[in-house]
Image (cartoon, rainbow, N blue to C red; front, side):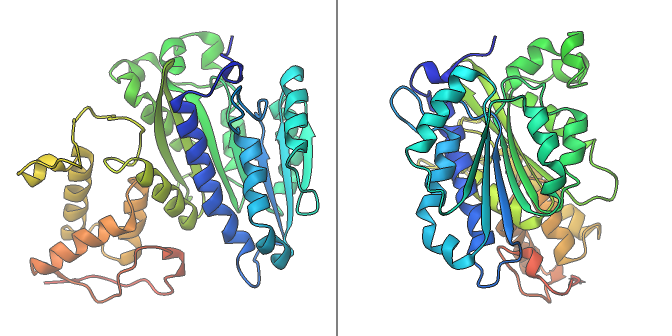
Length: 361
């Protein structure tokens, strides 16, 4: 039976999860309501495992944070004239009743429509799916276990044009039940794939599993963030088909984890303290970053990545920020290996109008 996180104060891991969710939502929302001429006339925000809305200390859960963020953006929402719909679901009736009561205390229905359901996740997802093809969407799927985000659900989700999602899974749950037939119906990852991975890195196996479902040639971005809680290791998986979405999510991740950008703990057990650097520069740099920088250097030198866009897309797919690619480009130029004939950027690569090619020396 799933643990009830609302029966006591949220633990530090849950608070980290909620903060990452909220930080990303705060970055996502202005994309659609800040422009003078919004691209989308309607946006939909889904929280389909809403819980009770608060913990026992009154700390806000995800659906309450959605409404709170919308309320704080009242002026932008009214100016934009963008129609906003918030869809909240909670399957357990007792939690649902508490959730409705909590939401009503802060809901500003002059700014957005609020639709609440006490149903199964799949029924809500299927009901709204066709409508999501005509709107911009953000889905937060804070499930217990893994069974809801099936192959069918995932494949339909990534076909939506302007839709970002963030879902939450238990890595320890996956490792424990990977050979159970009931579990394999939902997530077909073999024991062999998991056995050589620590609980800390199981989420990466899950991430790669979902990546195999992305059709060849489709540009789609996934990124993980691991969260350590008293009950085990949990994972957030983010998905988007737009470079701006992955840029913003990675910005949030690196704000929360300055070493690897992927966990609220020392996921690789490297014991690096950025506040007390050693005399040896390489010992202050996580292995993940060293591998990325070396790989990117080689791919550029070997002419596998020859354009600014190809370099930036590779960087984002590896879970790094565009500024990390620029560091390598500048180093190679200093070494007189290449010449950069384009303006370096640190964000918004979707705004780059013309792809530029590196000049090799």
